[in-house]
Length: 312
Ligand SMILES: Nc1ncnc2c1ncn2[C@@H]1O[C@H](COP(=O)(O)OP(=O)(O)OP(=O)(O)O)[C@@H](O)[C@H]1O
Ligand SMILES: [Mg+2]
Image (tube, rainbow, N blue to C red; front, side, top):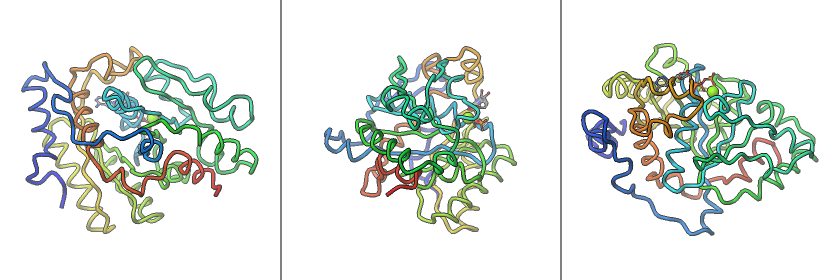
């Protein structure tokens, strides 16, 4: 069963209407504090929630949504680190208008400390750029791996680590999904995108059948379309893979998204009242309210990097 059915908490359209009214002109993001418990700093150390954002088909909005979801979470006083694991295409700099000078490679080679390569944006989102893909991270020498692990262990203050990956079923991408607490698979309503979303879900399930997989439908023309696309993916995954994919909601197709990219600023900051920003507020509230992500399964940043670096 999918989560939308008959449950107002999961009725994103109702949530949006409540928040922004019919016209989307006067949104009151988070007018009702989502239900989640503030954590003590000690708990925070153990509970960085790691969400890997991925897709089957490319160009569906992973980078745009990673950055802006990060900002939506940061606007709620969450400490968010965005890890750009898709360095090949270096998209985050386009969306945010920042150019990472250094990346994990410089840390691996000992030229920089990890904390020196973290970019702090004025919007309150921290960014870290990966080396060139998962395979290069998985093929490091023991000394190189340990260098990263020791440094990553110091990154304890974050509430969320969001990982923006490339598209597709290559081991590059799967490697970043498996150690995460949650995997957010993005699709658009395009049939090829839906088919490829199913493909990536299948690849993840074949590697690890117990992963928490959530689906986000981006570029929906209407809430009905968003819901129908989500139901389709949830249902076929359930039927053919016997896996429960959780419907995380939808984001409207919104001209403010490409407009903001042309300006090299995130739409969440430039157009906080846009349809896309309002949708992200709902998604962020939903992710924060999801206490399932804060249980003992959380792996933490250190353990996450140990796993992608294949160390113990
Ligand atoms: N909700 C939206 N409304 C309108 N346009 C959108 C929306 N989301 C994304 N786009 C557009 O889709 C394009 C691709 O977005 P983005 O680069 O975030 O995708 P991606 O999945 O990260 O791509 P890649 O697979 O190449 O990394 C961008 O030009 C962006 O403007
Ligand atoms: Mg991208």
